[in-house]
Length: 197
Image (cartoon, rainbow, N blue to C red):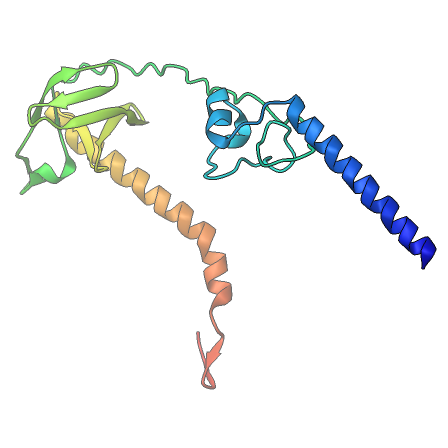
């Protein structure tokens, strides 16, 4: 028991020394909270609410004691290259729903074309980021997802709608081919003793 007591006393003295050294370590580096680390631009603070991802072992964190690792890493700023959209030069547009009884009934005038948008006479904005091309025809969408066609030459409108229908049909067939083996394999071969054809 005497030897155990002496070992215990040594452990207590070592722990006291460890605590003293830990405090000295903490005094060597200024400690920061999450807001300050975020201002420094450390990448580990991304989407953190109360603590950063390294708060328990980073020597800069006010919640770590005796830490010796500096986890600070500057966040890389995303590089966004400017997108150059084509100049369409359209005078008027329409949608496929404006044709009934075999006649096209309504066209919107393009009031203004900017680098990123087409602005129509009803103040609708068509985003050039939604431009897509089928064959030689270009289409553009509004914020709700409706597709607009160039109506500068009304004789081409029927052909543009046919192109859209063909592309949609191909998309549906491609998706059904991808899903059909999974669907057909999961069907039961018989229900309540009756075989299914």
